[in-house]
Length: 377
Ligand code: ACO
Image (cartoon, rainbow, N blue to C red; front, side):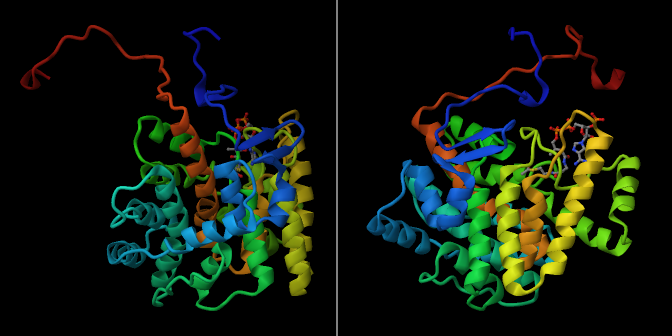
């Protein structure tokens, strides 16, 4: 590519080296910290996944203990952040906006810290911010975090005020591990761009939350659930899909910029959701989702031949998170609660070997205009 070429969307352009995750979009494979996504997602606690990204190896039992404690002791948020979240809830701001506002307050009162301490702090407070906002939204008092619970369990505990059962914790934890990192997606690129100016990790995570919010990135799982409910009401999945595609609408939870086959994370989350619904004795809903996936993929192949539109991660995210009892309004914030592990790991990696990220644009405006004073315009 010559200097003059324009590449809208930076498709196919490599701008960083990373050891954090690798995507093979043709084969449908995802490696995180050297492990196939399924291997990591099923076995790790979220704390182990973050340690792996930060250190490129799994922790020993003692190191894990220490890392867990370091995260757990930073879960509290201050009165200032709580006041912002109460106001956001009263004004019915979307959860991602509340998270952005809460995240911006995350380093209040912590003093000057090193980037990794900032990173741990941001990871630790994200669930507290989301749960606090949600409790206010529901007219309840926030629940104080519990340091004895692991990250995923404490999140569910702060949402509901009740200690969650192991099946729900495992479901959430599998989800958090599955989406923790995914190459140079838009929000991760944002995080790297922010710290490339030698700005701080909290600013990087806050900016990344804003990027993740959009429906083309992390905003899809809520609409996926709406779609699944609408299909159920419609009663005819084929007819529903046909109507949507004929109206020029996109089917949420399908298609991906990188994958040309089924997103490997969809497989991990579909297994996790299947296990969860089996255990809960509620197989009908899950079976109808599986049947809809088949109908949708066939219809998309007919609708866009050669584009290989297949199921993406958001489709089974909706099924799994809905099953474990996370409200639909919080789906994208759950994504952020996981991905902040990846954002911060990328920010630290970028800082380790930094080069200012500064692409070019092609100017399409005029040149050499001469100034007209305001009273002559
Ligand atoms: N339903 C119907 N048609 C689709 C879909 C879909 N889900 N996805 C892509 N297409 C069509 C587009 O309309 C486009 O058609 P055109 O060439 O006639 O304009 C063609 O397929 C190519 O699509 P692009 O927009 O070029 O694909 P891109 O790589 O930019 O977008 C994206 C990928 C944004 C995920 C897209 O597939 C989409 O909007 N999907 C639905 C939303 C969604 O599920 N988002 C979550 C993504 S996963 C994640 O970020 C974690």
